Image (cartoon, rainbow, N blue to C red; front, side, top):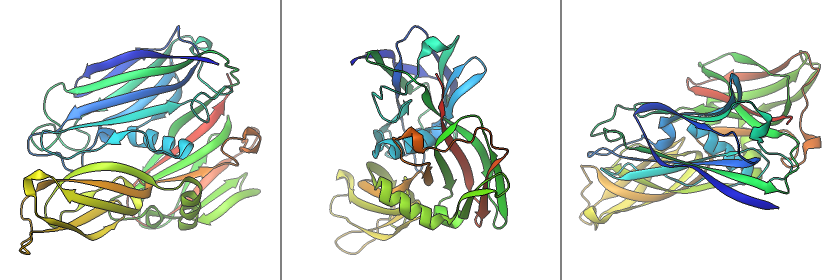
Length: 369
């Protein structure tokens, strides 16, 4: 096998609300597109506002045909479930500090998969589109991302010049978004055009676990002629932890005593924080950590609580990154075990709701070349 890296963009400056379009024609088959985004925080900090929030959509398209369409958080979580590792990400809330995160589109089961990849030659107008909204969480300024054109985007295509045997690609899309309510079932009809590799739900609201938002999930085919599963979400999450393990990252925060801190992992976050140089001598403890939230206790040696925000850094570990739940269809690396919906009359998810939250459904399918 012979591979090469094609650098398509390096630190391309982006405006606060923009869509960058990158032509992919003329490239060899692509195993992955690797994106890196960095930006600067405002002078008074940037609490609970991260790069993956402002990467609002990443698409691979061929004219009106959309092959891949995910937001930043969905892309990062999907990579974790496909590789067992988070992409590089350094969220930071520090005043005037920088943060950068990576977003990688894997078109195969893993990097350099010889069987599944994206071959631009099979399309008339292949393009990558990356959409930004710096004000997705909070307006740019002293307490958000810094004002000005200071988003930087880099894109590298991991190409296969020799040894590729393309038989299709794994294409993931956000297929349905909704806001859950506090009771009742939500029925979502799924597409029946291509084989399913992985289904991923994102059920996010701070201070609630994913299994508190959606308590039960049923996968039914042809009006219950075949029910693949009808499970409690908490049990599916247990299985996901056993299959994929924990996610670990470095996370810089700007907090005072008993500040509620937004964290990346929804389930069982374990946050080990310590002070930076500006408040040396303070002792950092934990009041609680659960449901996408961490609340530190911060006292001086004299027992005085820290009353104004200070820079801390921590190692964060846990599972269900970005409040997601993966449901693989069969063995992740064996296509003959995946679910084929073609020819079925109806495929549905039935989600039992219990908490109001942001809910998104992502489906990764095997598309023919």
